[in-house]
Image (cartoon, rainbow, N blue to C red; front, side):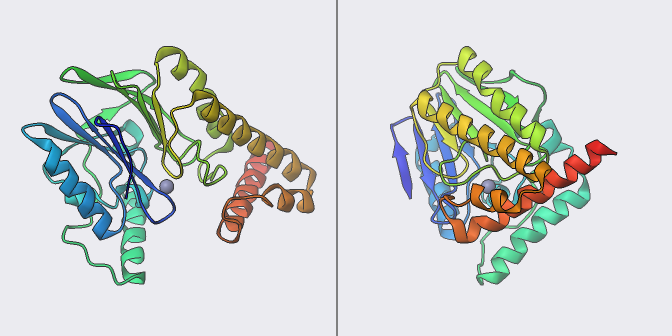
Length: 276
Ligand SMILES: [Zn+2]
């Protein structure tokens, strides 16, 4: 479903987990971020891309390597791929795990795809904060965003001011901490520097509602920081009731409670490691 279309930026929202796929048409390129995830939805994004492409080069941008975000890669064999350096260098075992999750998902729902499932081959690996990839009169400016997973990246598409966030700053979920809670906080705190350097006109989270309002994104950021810090405090105190109540108003509680418990386990493990 096309959730936003302002002529330059087009945000598709999957029926699954409100996952977003962003298509930005620049003078010489079509930037497609995380095309996902049902075969019909990937097909819709592919068809849309072809309809606006003309003689533009298609650029696939991956926000991170979680399987729901790389699932559509095979539908864009003509594209060059941009991702973080850690995405490009991820170990074979990690890649195989991501691909196996895609196969599991497709088997679970009897899904067939008209393209091959494979791990994206990165043409432009972006390292550091503020690294730029020129694209004609446009450019991508990339910021490392580890924490949710190990290889996340936030990217500003300039001069359009579109910030593609990956799995951060969602209104559909609290932070899912698969990698490292401290790094997650540091990534959230980078937002200030990004807002100072860029005039952002559209913020697109990996899941949930895009917004053009910086104060909305800053309030999501503050809520996410509060959640992580409070969860760390409660976990250190062994306050199980407090931990449970922290996720009481999660947007999709029946599904999300297990991720909340996973976050608590992750932080407990981090605290134990720090104490050794
Ligand atoms: Zn995701």
